[in-house]
Amino acid sequence: MHTEPLDSEGPNLFKVSEMLGIQDNVFFSRERVEFDQMNILYNISDFCINTSYAEGFGLSTLESMMAGTPIIAPKTGGLTRQVVDHRDGSENGVALDIDVKTLVGSQQVPYIYE
Image (cartoon, rainbow, N blue to C red):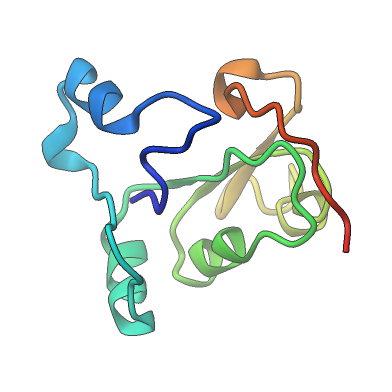
């Protein structure tokens, strides 16, 4: 599931999923997904990945953990308080160092604090 598969700052995720041969296993939303549908999607997912380079509060991470879906997230911003290695890691998530560039991608836009 991804809400912006044609993000101008990163790769075309439609093409990436086709190249990897996983297009039938990936869901790209083209419109707003209602809460009850989101809950179903989290529950049928094998895992969730948050690729944010800087996140004040990871709502999708929290939603994934509430549904019991394992989460992979970078150690950055508010995510460091949501996913804690050796506490949540074995059951709910894995926190990775931010220098894992293949997870983070090529996001060059600086995070703006409100």
